[in-house]
Image 1 (cartoon, rainbow, N blue to C red):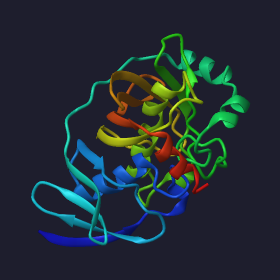
Image 2 (image 1 turned 90 degrees about the horizontal axis):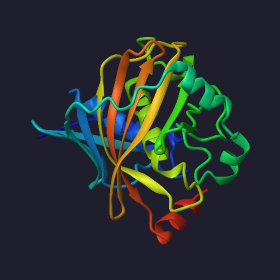
Image 3 (image 1 turned 90 degrees about the vertical axis):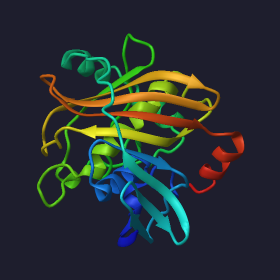
Length: 250
């Protein structure tokens, strides 16, 4: 077992205001783990704006905040591809989206992935457009230059971030003022990282519920149907006390 480099999750990449976006944080660890598909479990809210350490052995890579394990990455499985909707259906859902209502009920409006409070060149602004199928949300996405890494493609952590919130909104879009949830575990397979400006379609769909756990999937496709990435996620419904703690940091 050997310590590796450190990483700092910048405040730009928040989910709740005081912690890292779940998908982005999972992607940071998956990138260091270096295998695809990968599964990442979040054990603590990822801290922002301070160095975190990677620790790797033959089977896992861990993200550490001092002696505290924040997240663990290991080998994943290939997730299901989920429902395929046409570009026209997704464009129609986006055109009908009530942004004002969404803004008024969003628990974490500055979330990097789905926050309506983020500027176009800052957050991803992937919103949960509703479809005729209950429990499936969709959105057209065109990555901007601010999502690129040195390769000129969308960075791996940001691809993971794009898969994050749609899988949660598949559950919460029907009741946006109900109990909020946070990402607990994410398994993702990245087949190809998107190009900047590429016209994409993002889909999230429900799977199952068990107590406070909610499972769901998400996928990123091109407009002609090529599957770029897919994920399986486990979300945890927050208790009233946990939600109050997250919101107190706004």
